[in-house]
Image 1 (tube, protein in one colour):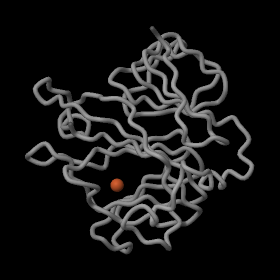
Image 2 (cartoon, rainbow, N blue to C red):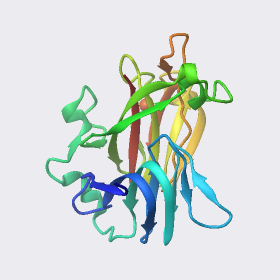
Image 3 (tube, helix red, strand yellow):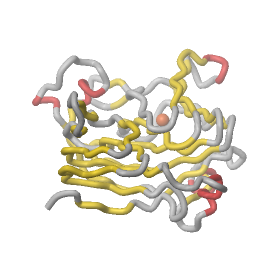
Length: 238
Ligand SMILES: [Fe+2]
């Protein structure tokens, strides 16, 4: 079996999304954001040969992906008229303040979350604390993904922890221009780093790892410069 395709319903109208596992010579025709959510490099069939690393993404068009164990493909070639209506699609999206302990006056919307397999990695390597992975540090993680939407100029809330134990998160920009920001404290005036995101980009992890192997974060938030759709890729320790 190869090229096992599974549609992922973040939207019925916009940004057709397909999860492909056991990738073997998979042709990408339309302009598509490709996110490597697996354990292996995904090689791209052109000379010189290059590849997409795990937990990174790019935009591809008219090219074959040679291999890879788990890729999420988001077609961005379709009609985007009324795309802000994505959050009105019933059953798929909620105002975050309606489903979580979160301010209802922040226009942050969350899609359904999906489990997209179990992956393995060395958390010290993935967060940059060591230069190469060590077999003895490899752990398993359940990958969960959801999309977020916010209109332009939304502070999506500074936070330092998501849950206990915490997961590793990275975000893939899908639509619009946004940024991930770091702060010295839970205070917008203490900003010390901006990571600008345009469609097809995934930022490197903000997390570090504590003595127990758990993920720890600086104060951080997502900020939308324009209307934005982005994907949270969460790796939950098992
Ligand atoms: Fe976060």
